[in-house]
Length: 289
Image (cartoon, rainbow, N blue to C red; front, side, top):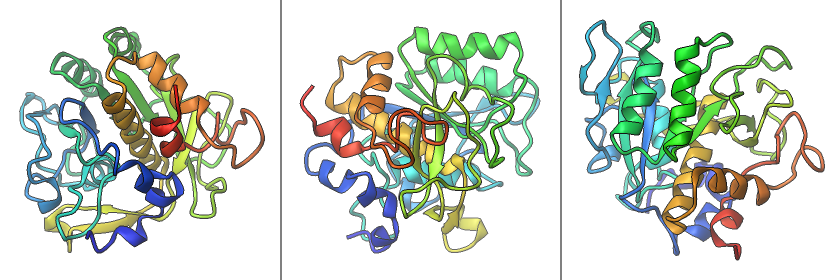
């Protein structure tokens, strides 16, 4: 009974509506959204958030539930907006919890080392999945170490590959070994032309014309946006549903499961536009192991 659900084509195209009767996500599976924060006043996040942290200022502090930029709230809605509350949209994994970690301030800028500290904080505070809808072509050694630390601690790390529309510089963590780098598709199940491509893409997911939550202070609480930033959280939510259904799977097994069950929509086999294919949540969760 979420009135905007018909406009969320990502739900039906990935088969998520067939998964929900079986698995909506476990509250034990916490997804860290490392971004510009999540608007804690938004009704779609009532009861969905665990304590987070704010690395967006010089002095980090507990928080993360303020979002003056909007990006993080949009990303978070794709994963975990409340389902069945009679308003708005539904997240892909509404039964899971969201951990708001703010690294971008009201202008979308971050402090040096903020993302690295955020990844480590998420791991140490119980995140099972991390979504990074951002990237850098030249991260330092500390960042690479943080991404590897997350994987070593059995956290699924999912990242956007970028919106250049070209095959160009790799972006990290998306291009890091073991990380799920996500490109974007559209409502026709084709490549979204803004999506960066290359042999380092792992998976694709709907990222064009994505309706999701937006800070209450910036309008009516919803907005349509484009980007691999919107595709990445859909895959992070898919990982969260797989981890809810199969709690004993390692992060590497979750990644392999998502890749093995993905649907070829651009080209047969692995291709530079969609990697292993467009994520198929119904198969990832419901297919026999």
